[in-house]
Length: 200
Image (cartoon, rainbow, N blue to C red):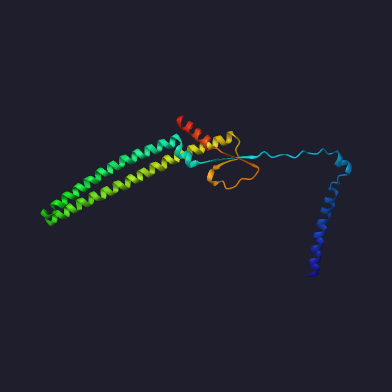
């Protein structure tokens, strides 16, 4: 066993010695004092500060012309649905009052029929309210998504055109080092979003 280990070590040495000899031949000699004196000094490079922008995306989304228009549109649609729901509620209340005023004159079969009729009206009314809420929510999500897509596109174009390393949402920046140039771009992006929306 000892002989086998010794043979393995010898084989490894035989493989490594030529490699070491070749490496020794390629070693670059150390620079002399004369060589050092002839090399010109390289001036230190001062790094250009990274430009970082920040925006208040909520402010832009709500205060842009697009956002103000969307708010008005959603408010108008909500009012229309509320008027429709209120009218249906009044019909339901009228039907209920009518049934209650005549309930004493109905036969058991008529009472059961009126009860089923009223229950169907109640279910229909509840479905109207639910569908109206879902419709408003979907419209709001869709239009809000469009606003944020427009903001994102505008920010991207502005960042590329003005050599920004990063443009972030304002509240996400917790710290910036001394080698950074941080700028609040909210008003600039707001104006650019308004211009882009007008030119759609």
